[in-house]
Image 1 (spheres, one colour):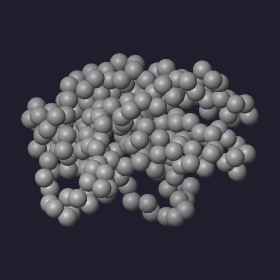
Image 2: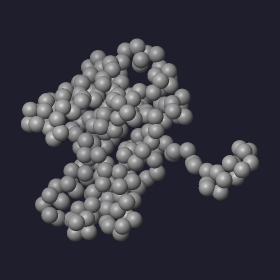
Image 3: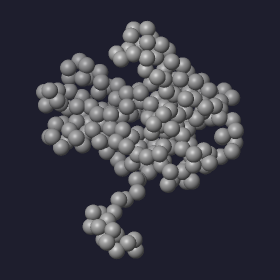
Image 4: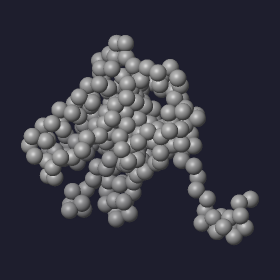
Length: 229
């Protein structure tokens, strides 16, 4: 199926590498939430918003310890997680979830001067809306191997060096390419070379904040035998 429909759009670089491994043409678009419209003006009297969830989306204690006091004192906390009542969701539950999601987006759009979050689906739509974002979480995983080309993904070893004067990112050109490619595919056409070039220019780059280098297998074996030197 993938061979029939290639090239395949991927949310992240890890997924693209999987297709590359199987010799299937693919490209990275980033998360679809990056196509949300940019807010017209910054929030009047806006405040910092700290948005978090459960599991890998929890707030880390040492992150809270590193947030500057003026930000922490004035921040609004948003717990962006809702239990799933039914599987599959009923029509009523879908409407409830849609309304809840919209309410979260409205808070970010209308109130946030800065968003601090470990959640991809807070960071990505906020970038699209032109809101400054600090993306800080307990670890990196494959889902973040596209957004980390646009903003840093901070983990605990970098929390003390976070740039708390984050500014909004210009993603309108990238957003246009994402929408252009989607429209072309829906019409049964191949993605335009110009749009693919825009996507590649953003996502083929190295991560903004490089992850720590892992020691080679040989070095790890030597350390186990002789101890760290």
